[in-house]
Amino acid sequence: MAKESKLTTAGVALRLAAVAVCVLCVLPAMARAQLRVGFYDTSCPNAEALVRQAVAAAFAKDAGIAAGLIRLHFHDCFVRGCDASVLLTVNPGGGQTERDAVPNNPSLRGFDVIDTAKAAVEQSCPRTVSCADIVAFAARDSISLTGSVSYQVPAGRRDGHVSNASDTVDLPAPTSTAQNLTDKFAAKDLTLEDMVVLSGAHTVGRSFCVSFFQRVWNTSTNPPTAIVDAGLSPSYAALLRALCPSNTTQTTPITTAMDPGTPNVLDNNYYKLLPRGMGLFFSDNQLRVNTQMAALVSSFAANETLWKEKFAAAMVKMGRIQVQTGTCGEVRLNCGVVNPSSYSSPSSTVELGSSAPAVDEESYAAS
Image 1: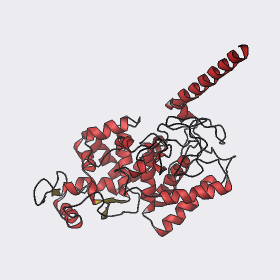
Image 2: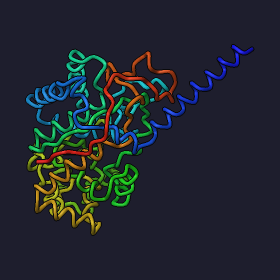
Image 3: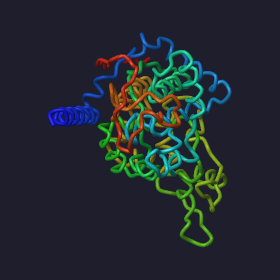
Image 4: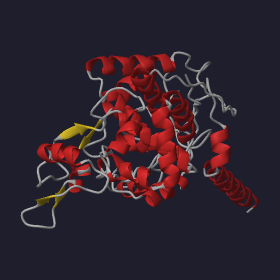
């Protein structure tokens, strides 16, 4: 009986310890504080260089991949936090993953670059560098290649175990109003200014017709009739209408540059285009209809250096959203699937890891 009591007591203690760890996993301030610049300096000193090489090689073949990797980081962080959940091809808990959800499929890209970088890092430092950190590094390197903007990435993120398509409702849609945008970003502890700053990422990359065709076609009539949405230049609308058919669907494989002037350069041209009625998305034009947002747009249009400094800072801030650190989550061996030995249930969040302990460091440098 005494032995049974001891076992019971030990079991309770283990359960309480597990609960305590889980509680720590959901304390955002504590998790953010565990990220630090140079996290892998000892455990994998060439980690960032290997990621940089993979990004540079992909960029040399296709300059557009940089925009894809920046967007990949954004879509990862806004759904369940920066935990590489967007990379999962299978959800052990069942159901469709984020990767296959409408906001991500077929438009999200860069998965192959992350896989290449992960393979190189695993060969050099097995079971050490998380996929979530690789995504953050790749976005930073893409920004450097397209905009000559440099900043340091605090690392120490861990990879999550869950990826649900339904969670992508957290992503701001291209049809969002000014209030929608403000609320979506506020839910992630990002300010209105952060939102306007990060929207400037639309200065690089391309978009599928489905994200904007209803600004130039009225599909409630049969056949659809031509329209020009409020805030859209008539000449720009005509170009978009000629590009995108009135029967556009989610799978229509036609794309256009979000910034027709400098589509592969991270600059402030996005803000210059907005007053000319050349914001591609309804949500882009919303930055003009809100007085506070419009003032920021004018400021960034006039001062590219200011915008780039704020963009680097906002990327670092975004990279801290709902991160898992320490003993929370895991370091995936394959970015597309959770480690078989670490997954016990859909709600499991505890997995011991091999990364060095982290301390807080907020520093970054923009240039």
